[in-house]
Image 1 (cartoon, one colour):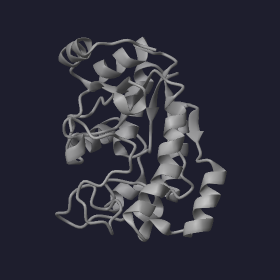
Image 2 (cartoon, one colour):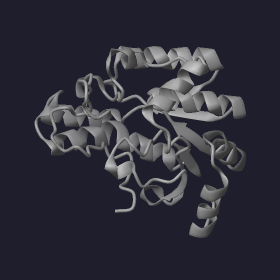
Image 3 (cartoon, one colour):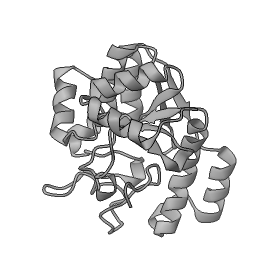
Image 4 (cartoon, helix red, strand yellow):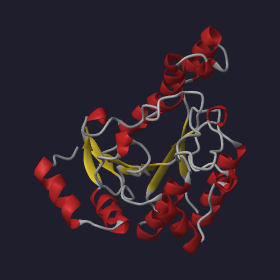
Length: 239
């Protein structure tokens, strides 16, 4: 495990300014124990392209919840083929899923916020924690303008939610448009749902296209009213 002080982390954030600099530091420092957690949205595929240019052996893992869109599986295969990479796929524990569905039904998440968080917990959070226990750090596609919870995140930070490992957010300062521009300029495969009005893509039953003028994450858990909806993968920053 690493042992960075808050001062060292602050110095790194002041020194490393571009996403590529941040990624190069992370991948050089932890060549085999740093990995990108990818849902294969626009942010993640942009980061994958940068990572592969820095270190073609960099690790990428994804959480297959069992409820993803076909378009998400399509872009996974496109990315795998273009960059010739092995994507480490994490699945939820079958017994946990079976028990949850048996007790609460297949579409439990529509019934209450508690049920929705239970489903996210079993299908996403538990597999993530299992993977992060094996790593010294993880890379995310978080952007500060996605939600208020994410607005205080740093490029590099210590993750208190996961045993104090390093959390790297290389494009935290990017806008949605910057992300799309990078994909276009670098000919990166992307999820075709982005062309159908889906800026943020999660599980198929829990994601819809957004209407004109809606926030970028309005299509996630669209039946819930809280504007700061999260699935539990990312702790609240600075709160």
